[in-house]
Length: 248
Image (cartoon, rainbow, N blue to C red):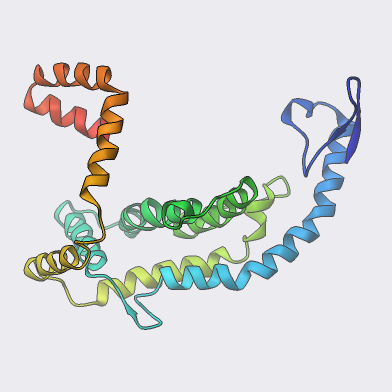
């Protein structure tokens, strides 16, 4: 869409105009027209990607998928959360659901979905980033226990997967229920599992490279590190713990 501009003669817009032009009625109408034109393209693109998104969600929310067993750490962590809820008399299923969602899907998987460059040696462009943000938002909405009421003024990325989210939510609930039914993991089994993982991946990390990265960071912020160290020494143990929690 092209609108007149005093300096360059024209202005080119994408799907919507900038917010600072929201008071112009004619511009608002034009933006709405462009959004409606591109809505069919959004739906077509969503249809093309639907199978891949479904496969992703099915893989992440399945205890046994395509021959891959659930990692012991997930079962151990979820049981720990249930034990803490029982100990503190928390019987609200929504609270337990939220705890588990915050620990794994929202803490770990959303970060991987939005930032594939953390796992793969790739460049993430702005368009790819925007598309992955839509998938990540759908993923977060699927883990939520609250109902999302959408209207005509809701953003298009919310509307695209509005009909799919109830199905995704049922997958999440089934996933948590299936994990709860699995046999409990003892502390000895968990320790043995962690020891085995450490042995399997012992040669995959370059310790000297990690030390070099730490040295580069410390060299860059040496003054700040020394000031923090000086202030750290003068604090009591409980104050140090509080500071550490804030930093992390």
